[in-house]
Image: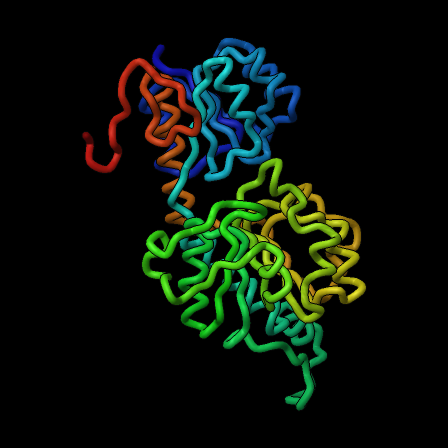
Length: 339
């Protein structure tokens, strides 16, 4: 019969074709609720489940799961309890490195869109309220010369910095607040002399645009809370392309409504797809439906990598992009070199 794959939501080709070539594929007709997914994982009918970020794969589910592995169709894997998976001998894979530029593009789009009030301007024109040029119509703020603060300085933050330098922005960063180690000049590479590392507190207080690029974990959940928002400049703009729960969304709504900060550009939300009450009604926001990786090439490559991970796990090999440190019976095959 070959390998057996459970796919919670159809993924683009070549992912589905790679899975089909390797074995039997079951695709669920609609995204499963937690109880349904837990029952399917415990059934013993599947070797690997290919999950989405919305699929919760927690410790209780993994304790009963009869799986070889979980392949997440995403770079992030905060929806999976990796420690529990490791304890139960379940391999976890993800899709790193493929959406860096696409997500950095969205971060820059949100910076520009919020600064120049693009959504408000578009709505005004569509509603028939544009009556000609006016000296003070929808005045925004300059991006050129503004201070961009990057919370985190990984791949996506660096790609965002690269774009921001082209707009003449001053760039500060805090590596992974709070309390992450200092990044040496040697580690800055191309950015040496072009960006400056500061403390988390200085980043919050000095940034005209505070852009979040940290993973979601116990340290970063609600990293931007009511206190942080109150320390930001009153004309500052918050940008989030990381994970929704990094921001206390209820506190953000209050801060935006009371003009504690000037605006926010968000591609992710704390309780997706639901928004905190009042957020959608605020004019000083740009809200996107988690489309940081939404280009045809990126989503196709994510599908390819997640399928390759799933096939390798099902066949007892270490996947090309393993999240946990389990050792499978056969070494991984490098998907780029074939070695």
